[in-house]
Length: 398
Figure 1 (cartoon, rainbow, N blue to C red):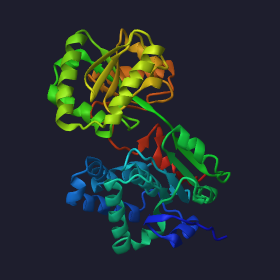
Figure 2 (figure 1 turned 180 degrees about the horizontal axis):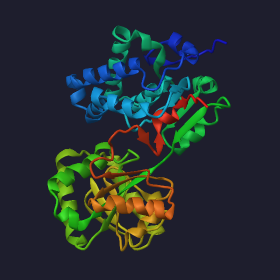
Figure 3 (figure 1 turned 90 degrees about the horizontal axis):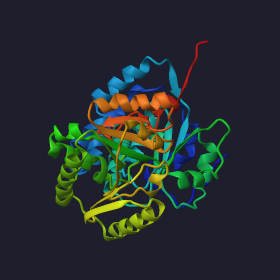
Figure 4 (figure 1 turned 45 degrees about the horizontal axis):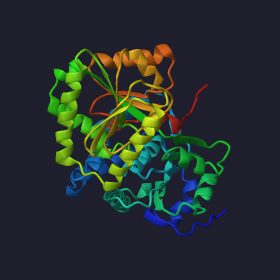
């Protein structure tokens, strides 16, 4: 059956590739051709002066460098014979420009062909990545042309329904509303679907460890975790939790150092500043006793009188931080619920303690526990899913 696709803008690939993709053969996990393609893509991007001006593109290129990919290939080779499911259909997010490329890597590594719908929002990173991928497929990796199609189309386009009906994998980024809307388009009975729902993340700081650390480095690391993505990344901390003895002195120094960093590097839009005012007003009604600390719209802190499980309903972005002093690390349990993705920490001893709390209490949140400055690091495990394994099938000998 030939499916009709209308009003589609092709950034990589064409109509023939799109129509034939459901018939493209699956590849083995970490196939040689895919490894070669990704390593070459990394090499080209790392030498492109344009890419160096975008930290997220540079980080993506570094993630798929040859040494890293080959190391992962060796690790996954020990997990048995695996091959892709077939065709993956990706709905990618509008707030993180490079995420479509990350999703593509997951599917390619697992052995799948991919159709990726990217946002209508214009990002130079998307243009650069698509241009580079398109050139490599045309010149050096023509054998992989049937495996990659990157498109834009309107939300009401019938393409979503058609692609959903033929795909073997459906990967939905963008949050709860996007997932709900896309799921109105049915998939095949054996289709595997992953929905990356709305998540939030937190930071836990040991005050005494902070006071012994390089404060400029910590300000840089926290800035990268949060401001670099306007706190739009699911892994960016929205809630800062303090522990230790000398909390007051640590807080004063920490926020002052961060404020200097923000003044030097961050540009806040007018609308974001206005939204912060409204957000605090709403939070005050829901949680009497909150204290807002604002010396500049680009950095707003809201100290909480108590830590409640639903406090993250009032999370903000663009430099809006909820804040609380922990009496005990056990209090973390009320925010380590299902929507909590990443816990960044400062203080080496906190890693094991946070891990122990999750396992001892059987908590459903906290998929990642990483040092401050690493919340945006790319990984083949995301939101608790081991992506190469989830997106491939194992050929059993028994």
